[in-house]
Image (spheres, rainbow over the protein chains, first blue to last red):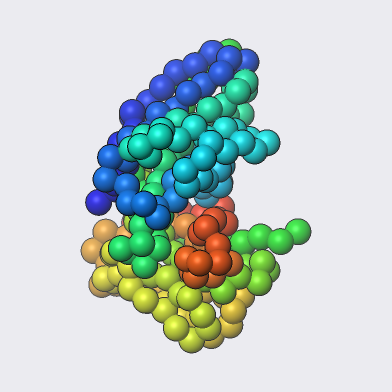
Length: 111
Length: 117
């Protein structure tokens, strides 16, 4: 079973920041938090990952709560091309380090 | 450019037929994976391979078979034993599966959509 909880969908306006939440209350100390996104009829694309500290890359920022039970993916200035399903996933050591995928959050960007 | 190539992109099959989906990567990755995705759902792992000539069942391996004779190739056969094969199939690879040396980033192909008529 997926070990993360995400809202089914979110809406945001173009050129505004987007904060996508993820709860992972059963995370273990060595689980990495991964985010991927999937555009319609395409394979998922890696976005960002982190362990304890906040992370930034060219695509997004990842804010991780101090207790690691939740995290937030931040798109600083959403564009129409950011409309996708966003998956928050834990890398699970108990499953031979496989990624366990939930249904994700469908992000809708309004022009 | 390096990446993962899946073919065919669309495939139609009659009931009772086996079909094979191709997956080729030129990333020099050791690990390869096959996932199935149903509408509105996340990905479910069918099979994975850590090295050549070795593969392991994932969560939903029944009705599927794979081979890993070359590092670059990991074909998936959907057999007639798979009761509900209509789905979107995704192949992925990663550098390896060693927890200590990498963080598991997956690289995906564009998928193959299989429809059983």
